[in-house]
Image (cartoon, rainbow over all chains, first blue to last red; front, side, top):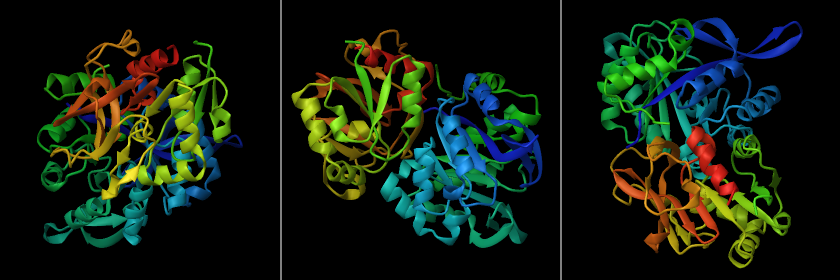
Amino acid sequence: MLKKRIIPKFLFQFQNINEHLLPTFVISRNFSKLKTIGSIIPQAKIYEAQLADELMILNIADVTCSADIKFLSFLKKFSEQIFMPLTVGGGVKSLECYEKLLNNGADKVFINSEAISNPNLIKLASEKFGSQCVVVGIDFKKLENDRLVVFSKGGKTNTKLNLFEWIKKCEDLGAGEIVVTDIERDGTNSGLNIEVAKKISDFLNIPLIFAGGCGLASHFVDGFKNGNVDAISAANFFSKRDQNIFELRAQLLNSGINLRQV
Amino acid sequence: MTNQKIKIIDTGLGNISSISKCIQFLNFEYEIVNNPSLIEEDCKIIFPGVGSFSHAMKVLNSKGWTQSLQYQVLEKKKMFLGICLGMQLIATNGYENNIKCKGLNFINSEVVSLKKLGCKLKVPHTGWNGINIKNKNQIFNDISHVSDFYFNHSYAFIPGDKDLILSTTIHEIEFASIINFKNIYGMQFHPEKSSEAGKRLLKNFLSL
C-alpha cells in the first residue's frame, strides 16, 4: 500500500556572507515577511536522517532557472549528497528549464506562474519528460462570497482563475502531481484548510500535496485523515516550532496513518 | 567479478547524478558514458531513466544505443540493471500516450499504463510502497521484507513469462517491481532514492 508522505519545503535564497554566496533557506508568512533560517545542505541531511519522504526546493530569486548557473551548480552539489526524492522549482519557464533541473539532480520539476500564462507547457513537459516529473504548484486565496481564486507570482497577482477549474485543467493537461497552498494560512500555524483539501481530493485523480498552516502534529493527522491528501508539505513547522520529523512520524503512526517503513 | 567497471548510461534524459553518487557512496568505481562505443569493454551496465517511453526510444535509436545495448546485453551477456523508465525500455513494446512504440526488446514484455490495467487509485503511483518477494535472488540478501521503496511512474512492466518477476508491488493492482532474466535486472522504483534498503539492493546488484 502506498504510504502518506511528509515533505519539508525549502524556500531557497543565496545570501552574501563575507563576500561568499551561501545557499540558505528562508520561511514566509502569507507569502511575505521572509526570514532566514539557515544553511540548506546540513538541514537537508537532518531531514534525510529523520526519514522525511521527499524534499522540495523552490528558488525565490526572480530569474529564469535555466539561466541561473549558480543555482544549478548548487543543485548538482546538493543532489550528490542527499539521496532522497527531490522536487525543484522557481523560475521554470521552458522545456529547457526542465532539462537543466533534471540533469542537475531534480527528480520532479515544480512549475507555478508560468503554467498559468502558458498552460501548454504542462502538456509539452509531460509528453517529453513524462507526467511523473511534472508538478504544478497552485496558490489560492479566499475572496468575497467564498470564491477560491488562484494567485500567481508568489501570491501577488490575482489570476481570476477558479481554484477547482484550474486544478482540473492542470490534470487534463498532463500534470503528474499538484501542490496546493492556502496563502492566507501560510506560516500561521492555524491548521490546514481541510474543507478545500477534501473538495480537491474528491475529484482529483493524481496525487495531491497540500500546504499552508501546519503548526501542530494534529494538523498533519487532520490533513491525512479528513482532507484525504496524499502528502503534506511544510516549512515553518520544521523550522520554528521545535518539531522534528521523528516526533511527527511517531504521532502520525500512533494516529493510524500509514508511513513508510525502513 | 566484483571488480568490473560500472558504466552508467547517460542519454541526456534526466537525473544521473544521484545514481552515480550513490554508487560512489557504496565504494564502487563508475564511469558515466554518453557514447555506445564506451560499453564495449568488460563492464556492468546501469541504465537509469526518466521521461516518456517514445521520446527516450527516439533518442536511443538516433544515437546508436539501441543496437549497441542489444548486442552487449543479449549477445555479450553483460550484467544490466534498468531503473524506472530504464527498466520499462527493455520491453518489446510500450504504449505511452496511447502510441505503440518498439522498445529494446531484451525480454518479451509490454509496458502498459496502470490505468489501463484497472488501477482506479491515483496515477502516477508516486511515493513509498512495499515489495512482495516472489522469487529468491541474491539481490535480496539482507533486505528486510517490510522495507518500502520510492516509486514514481504511471506505467507497469508486464513480462510474458511471470517467472521473471522477483517482486511485485500493489497499487490496487499488482505489478512487477523487480524483474530478472539471466543477466538482466530491472527495478521499477528508484533504489538510489530509497534510503538504506535501496542502497543495499543496489550494492547487491553491483556485487553480483
